[in-house]
Picture 1 (cartoon, rainbow, N blue to C red):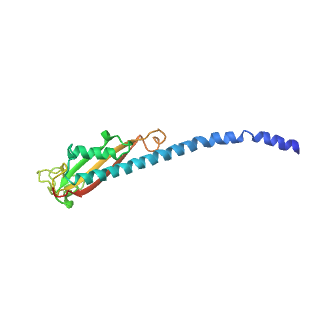
Picture 2: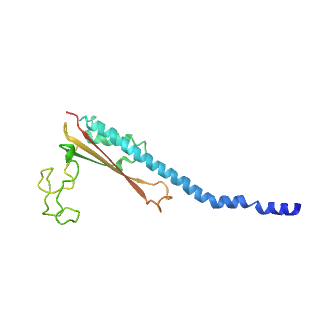
Picture 3: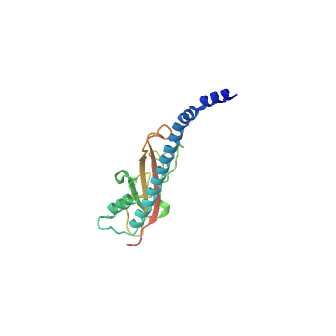
Length: 183
């Protein structure tokens, strides 16, 4: 009886190492994946927070001594805590007369293909004589104008762990519409 217990113990000595070898790769991939996703969510939050801060500055009409657009880019970069490359931030600002004008110029889809085709009737919101997908005028506008701030950023993952599942990057988009102060 004593001999069989000793023999059984000898057979189990390497089992912990084998179990660790089987479980460790999956565990490491899971932990690294969670860190990647957490960082990506932080980048998304920083991007939205930076856009909020930048748009709050933009509605005042101030220039911060360097021009409104440059100052807005600077504010976006300073709110990224080093995780976002400010050179890769795509910021688009468009002005509108009213909140109702935000978006595409509407058209009547006479051939029911879901897209605008030449000759189809449309509402020319920006009065340029042709259908445009967005009726806003590029820029930060003047006092009392409605300004839509849109930002887009491609976050590249730090490791290749999630590439087979998600791809090389994730694109974050955010937007906010505000009325400029009277200036």
